[in-house]
Image 1 (tube, protein in one colour):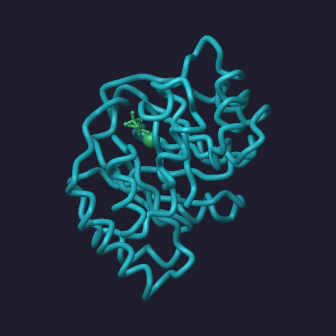
Image 2 (spheres, protein in one colour):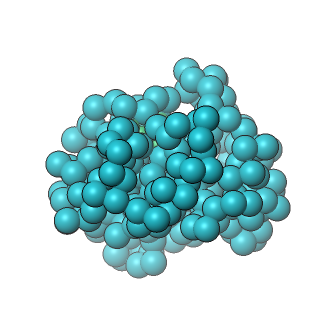
Length: 213
Ligand code: DX5
Ligand code: ZN
């Protein structure tokens, strides 16, 4: 199981120090939340910062687009060398086209689902995906309360992927902590994103360990 700290909860004044700290604490991926004020009611950061972070990161970078029209940024992600990119199913008209753009550019391609979007909407495209990101909060903000409605979705996705795409990675994002992690892992989550849970304590190593055990 991989742990992906969400930098949204890090100290933005000391980003490099924060990145080194989670790397040393055992993080597997760096999760970057991109918000545009349209798809979600919040703004974060954009391409210049993604590029800068990718330059210094020693672990793979995972970009989560919570924006309308993410398609205009996908090739740039490949140029920057971003490792994982997820776009929201609810944010694009032609999902299969955008997934093939990512894949042919050599980026791991994922689709993110809002809590209210059923897993079945991904069935046709599932064999083509590298990963699926299941939101366990409504996207837009860190520090929200975990929504248990993700559990049956995770179970269903794991079961269906076992038949059509055994290499699929499943990422769960939002309100993840040491209390819900055991059940998420048991149900088959491969990547856990955690922002507040990791960065709101001084000992990142212990927090990450708390997700794994
Ligand atoms: C929410 C973001 C999440 C969030 C996770 O819109 O996609 O990645 O920052 O933060 P926590 O763990 O605080 O819910
Ligand atoms: Zn995210």
